[in-house]
Length: 293
Image (cartoon, rainbow, N blue to C red):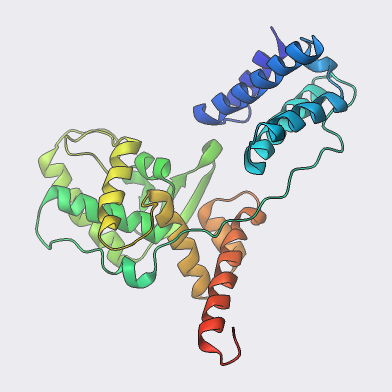
């Protein structure tokens, strides 16, 4: 079996990458292989040299690709050759000495606390309204990902310990504390759900037909909820994840605590929120201090 196919299987089985991530890796490596064949008449990915890689990256730059896109390609190649080295297919990685390109760190987009409080729901015993309200509150109060929300089951809610169990990326479990008000909200929703759908999939939140929610269903709900309260262009479940983390940091939570709540493997991933807060403080200082500008 070609090493590219073996590598893809490795990503799927051992690394447990999502189908979209695996697809992106395959596309990057196939593009690289096509360049090698056309430029160097080389079809063996394990015969690649560092100058070949540099030439390929230079071509991408010349095509006008952003540093972000090129860095993704570098990451794909680096992971592939790390695997090839582990399998004994290469003696030395051609990625040795190749560094990622510098790129500006965009500020994380989040909804202000004032705008979050504008999101309101009718206080009626209606299944869809109760479900939408709970969907919103779970995302904002826990910071879980869209896929993690869809996968929540009734038994993941631990009322005694006041926490929920979340199955994150690569099947990693983590526990997130929740307040009593949210638990009561879950109880109220479940009563309406079970009355409307006596038999249903093993999921906490269901769509309007009593079936498992799709990613688009969740996105559409959140987009509609945020549409009237914020001017942000991006109105997605991930924005609520950013909002959760930013509001925690603003209230004094440590980065390490936020890292554990979000399920980040590396603290560096969480540090983007600190950068975001610093930039906000700069704006406040410039506006409020007599010599701030």
